[in-house]
Image 1: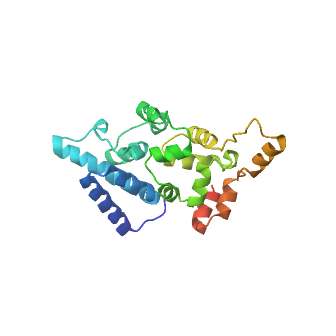
Image 2: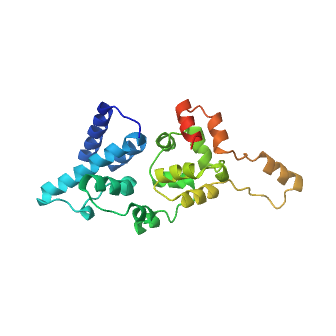
Image 3: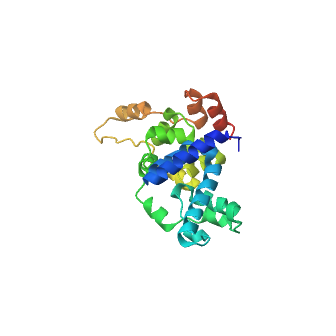
Length: 224
């Protein structure tokens, strides 16, 4: 992970604490999503904070089962807890385990737009959290990015932001593709014209090349 200025980390910690005092979980989630480069440091801080709070409340060291953190960072926090408390946990098994409640919450989600809305993110917040241009992310939501153009690492990065599996992300992307409602009375020529006028799908590389994203952001995605 790239080196981050300690003053920035301190400011992020203060912002997280302020949101904790307000009981504003959405602000905490947005903070983590907006600063992926600082997530590891923040996760360690959050884990220690909750453990300390429970220790003060019960006058005993909190067990892993008692420490409940934000759903967005649940799997990552298991790794953080192992570092903070010296716990021995199977990270590979944890990564594959998917809580039933989380699966149930996604049961009615059919497209990437619905997924973003379920996560209570605006179009801009989702794009910023992924370090993509708003135009590029909108193409994902419109089903205009070719799934086959994504590398395994790119697909994993996209899926992990929304805390779903790469397979689930791929299915939602396929479901996001526009469908043509052809009128039975249309002539064959009219139907062909409608298909030709439909927006063409692009590779992720092509969409990023046409975007006004910064050069570092473009390289970060294209080098994966």
